[in-house]
Length: 311
Image (cartoon, rainbow, N blue to C red):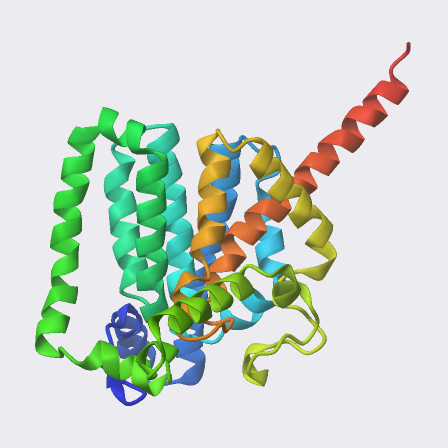
């Protein structure tokens, strides 16, 4: 579909067909349909907490995601980034089900990866980086379940056919997209300088100051006034969650969340950091913050229990 002067793959168009046929053309209908889909992200982060981390309070992740300013704003806009981020949460959930429970969930993982991939152009890079990192980190587990891997690869090839068709039909549109966005990759710069810019933009996407500072340097329509992109009161819990994840790096659940953190800004780094291109960060951020907050709650509860119980 033509979008902003260039042709793009966009799952959002198909999701809007039924609401359009039922209710007609309307900004409210368009945004409501998108908001309903983003409710899946709220469900998936809670399920990750419950299934992968055995959380007693899985709703904490949903609550934290709901009050995250960048998500609060963009989940109501019908921008493709919110759709891709929601499906990315599902991709992480089903991968963890595959990794921790049943190998058959790898097919679900492949399907959610494709839905993420086709929702938003920066998501293509995020999914590619996530798949490569998870493939390398869990290579032994994948080899143990190579039969499921073969099935998933077959499904992946099938799901990739629309992208191959797109590239054959519109062979220059990917470069045109980068030209419209004035990507430094198309500028007459030495390769070393391009790689330096890539690293610079990527590291900016991991910078806590960018995510938590009030009124971050983005287009005003993508910022909630006097708020950071992430939930500022939760910064301490986010840091605790990062520490917990690093301490339990050998456990697949924690490792997968850290992979999501590393993958989130990869798509934005090709052009320039912006919250829409890096919105994927809200998913691992919500999980890490919930893990940190739950750890504090458990420590307080244990201290109270020790204090109340007779010596």
